[in-house]
Length: 637
Image (cartoon, rainbow, N blue to C red):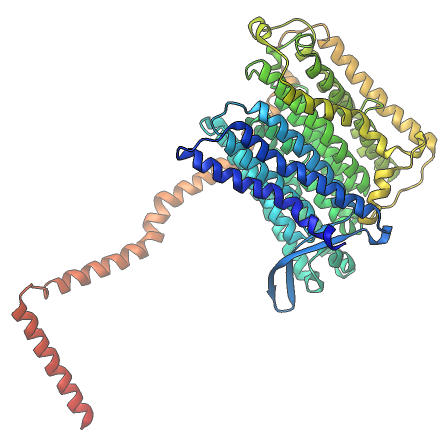
């Protein structure tokens, strides 16, 4: 038990040490000492891979424990103590964090390996892997934190790393602006998280501020305070996981290198909000009003993002909006108290979304950084491995049976229906059809039909093995991961849901298999309709259309960015201009200027006494001594 606890501390430490070592090596490179890309790549991959194997050791040890004892803690040190309050830098591994550790380290390791080929030749190769290791280490701290304060350390760490990686190609202004946007929008969400923690601490923090203590004391919260805490924490989740109204940063995050997009979208930063809500399931299940709000925000985000995805032309932005949409499904799941269903969709999504992003990276790599799907076409013969793996990922994303996305998405929709959220179920089925449409629109435009850019097509080639082998591994996960949580309808016993049960507060309402089959058929029919429409429009080739009406609005994302700019950004910039041009120089700085003026005048006055003659200074001394003698004689008398 003690040795296993020590392993827990090593899991986030290894990538963090890798980040420090690689960062120092990159600094030496800047001063003239060069290191090979192979050395950088090996050092970058060793930490995540070892973390994955340690996560396996901890996971199997946890599995061997009795169900009611499946939680391991590791206290690294006492962070701070104030009065009776003591907050430890401590880690907790239970079924929820144990599952997250496995796929975060596994997917993260594959993305690190893929990045060796994708980033080859970049002048900042070492710096990229330094940031990537730091990103993974921060995410592991977030997952392992034994309480919300420790979680917040990792929460802020992935926020910082997202800024560094999104704006990695800093010579391009667009990339820098995208990084700034991600950082600022996340700060807005993080304010909600901090306020939620503050109110929670004020209400029940005296009983302990780790998850186990908070769960035991949730009954002390009044309904108003409990709902307020849940909604404030959810604001933080909206920032990290790109939900309405804070979703606008995520599509712009595509400015970063493609492996970064895969890491952010698949298994790390954007799923942090879903993890946080699931971690606080004991509160959201208790205050159902907050959970209902979470579910509706999630499903409306899924719908809005699906509309955007139907009209985009950038291959990475199509996938970005699909991520926002799938995150909406996840929040719909945890919002209707189907926490295990939401987490299972996080798990399957990690495989097929990492696969699709890395597959898109192979296409971009082959076409010399071309990202417009209307400049592609006919690539399935040129890139057969990329095509087949991306096709599997597309089927999983669309929710086509028997691929992994079908089982996780269908479970969310069925649980929404079973828990009485019929409206959420209907919108979810509609979004399933839209997802199938825009996903296969991408597949048909990129790989089918005839080339639209003959020059790019002629130079296209399959990516090297260091990039395609991770695609094959991820494709296997995207195809088969769904069997881990097969429902009883298919002869399964919901292995993942059963595993997560000790960590989550949820109930499984009973509904007949007939209703379950009808709900499933509705979802499958919606998916088939979406794929069929996409095939008829794009399967045999198509030219870029001129969007009008609603399609034009969807292409321009309903001008939400422009509205935000007009309503929030420009007024704040105007206020800042007023402050910098008028208030600071004339009000704030006036006190400093006044003090400076006084000292200047005093200095000028005393300057008259500084004549530079020794005889004058001697006279000053005589006068001074005389005055002191007179003062002392008066005091004695």
